[in-house]
Length: 299
Image (cartoon, rainbow, N blue to C red; front, side, top):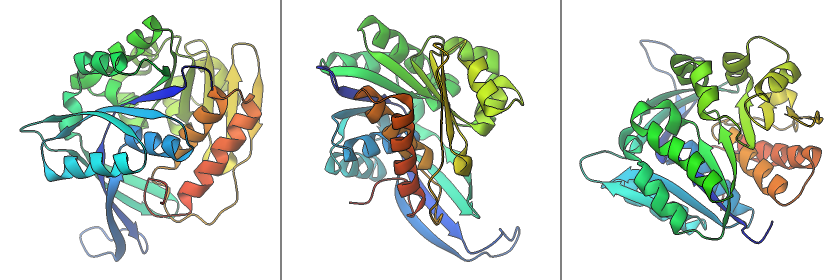
């Protein structure tokens, strides 16, 4: 890490209700499951995994002025995350119901107070973190119209302050709703864009992962396509291409795997690792995440 080593992570704070199903969902009937309530949210998860690597990290987000919001902030603080999280009266803390089975997960979301994240709050958080060297944005902030101004301000303010930037594309369905052209305009010239294969297909079409990454590098300086069990691909504007294999582990719950992957990639890359080494570290953390229930590192 350089002298300004703190990472600011901007985005969602969520309560996850994770149901690991015993088999296929029996629509209209009962399906046995292991159910767990835990902290979630793409940005909050990534911040927790970054803190677990011993790197200074600040989470910028919003919760409701409710018990769930207080619990989410308290648990993040215990893991070493500095929380620049505002509470909003009259809005619930965001909640996601996660149904997971056979290595896949389906999410039902209530964005709640995450929609109240504002550009002014982002500016205050940046001003309060003079040691920040990098800003990582969960694209959920951009994909919701109510919080889009905060996401755009986060990227603009980071550039103004000389921070490097990264964006996780978040989710294919809302990307499809806002449209590839708009999204790629919003994130133009970020230093690093992370997408999974579904998101890459929305943004770049049905190409092979390397071609998708090359197409997206017209918008972002570096692109990583996450391919799940098939590994990951890194492409940048210097024509560097790196490929990493996924780790072979027993999959318990894929919730938060991409967030762990992002944390491993960022901490390694910002510390000076080359693309292959950064991808390897990302794969290690992603494998750790899928081997346990829940989206956060275990204590």
